[in-house]
Amino acid sequence: MIIREIRRNEINAVVELETQAFSDYDYFTYFFPDAKERQRLQKAMIRCEYSTNLHNSCCLAAEEDGRIVATAQLNPPTYHKPSNLSYILHGWFGVYLAGHHKNINAWLAMNKEAGEPCHVFCAQEEGVWYLSALTVSPKVQGTGIGTRFLDSIEDYVRKAGGRWLTLYTNSDKNIAFYRHRGFEAFDERTLDTPNGPIKNWSVKKAL
Image (cartoon, rainbow, N blue to C red):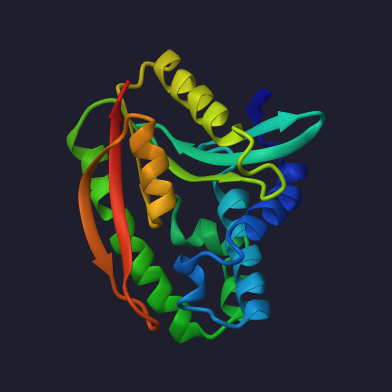
């Protein structure tokens, strides 16, 4: 498996992979139950996120047999979130054209709350890297790709002088995976959604 940076001409492939992986994820379905609307929104959000942050973050791909099988956005301690203008210039209006603005705003508020403990930890400690949306293609889930990719990400952070890796997750399956990999939950909360509560765990690992 080859770990490398994502190229701009690969953003469409990344969008397709991540949209498929998150197609039935409660984090999205509870706000956008209509499958077609949800797919439009996810594609618009993911495309805008990578287009905006491709050179601001470490946007990584795991490649196997010549195809991308997993992706991740990794923010170093020096990362600063791009301005609203930058997001707009990279297609954020397309997100609001893809779905109902009220639900989009509610999802954004929930997403901000979910990530807050990790961002506070990044600000309070030295050498913290933030891992956003580690995603494995549904075609290879269960084959060990996720574990190998995470191992490579941890090595990447260590070699860059990082001391901590932090992220948040929202499913029992995922939190079990990260705990097995040595991550410690330092914040657990329940997020409100239009269709019921979602659990949210913020985790960290010393490297």
